[in-house]
Length: 445
Image (tube, rainbow, N blue to C red; front, side, top):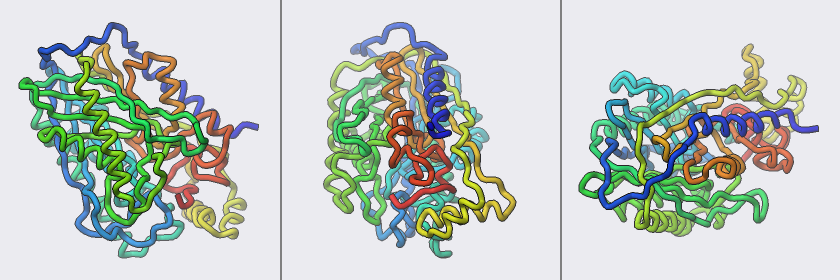
């Protein structure tokens, strides 16, 4: 019998296809000529979000101590793009494992009040580095035990501070907009491997968006790679390979802001594996991305033109069959990480709260005239969604993102559900079903 939540992946695949198809990208892409049309106004900014105090790092459940120092600074970076008199669209890249949509809503409300920015015009992506501070609401049961009070105070403090830092980055990017051209191209980076199946599917595409001022100066470089940020697992703040990629892009283009987001790579890991404190491995992966970005930028790029069209919708995804109180009690008695998570659920029932039965799933789309459409999917989305959309639609006009706007769940495909195991199995064996990561079954990673 198929798992009950197979209908979730089927509905999401269908919605993703329809989402992009709602505005077909007819017309031909134009090669970038020697004279750039300054059709857009673009601003970019970066704000350091590294806490000056220790916070327990998120992502690996076995950690028990707070961060022991800073290997690399963490950033919130913003790219603000507007066309004509329309309000800008702001894309945020954040060095963090993930945040919940409630935090994104806080940022959006502040920007709406200050700049009259419509809610759908804010897009937040996170790099999913496993070496960034935990925030409340994201993987709340990952450590299989409550945080000590002093550690929880630091998580609370960082959770409260982070929205203001993101708002600062977005505000600066909006305020420094200037006439600019936009162009994009696609390269290839090959260090990602399927972490579930040897030789399994991977998305090696590296789309690159470049914003240039009228004098030719590079204002911003934005790129996306579909791979987990898990090269590093030590106990220090770091952006992992995505952080090094940003750093090296900015070194190559000193006056530009380098932004990195993650594609549909929930089932992809770096070929290095999880290396502990092998900073050289993460830096080499970042260098590989930066070198390919430079190569793509040196070649012919496709010019973007036309107005921006942005949409934000939500889909209610029903979850797998919920456990009974008796099943939860039996799991608690068995102990271990699953037992702790089951106790979390029982506490909800004891408070008179129902178990979460569906995921409010945000899907966002940003279209540049008839030349390009970006799609932003929430949570940890497996590669099958990107490969299918690129296969069935015009792969030269679509740019797929995972890890956007909400860190709620793994989103497996029918293939992962049939394979089972980490990333797509039944809730009794894994946390990888499409379920609320913050309060369900996340074992140690």
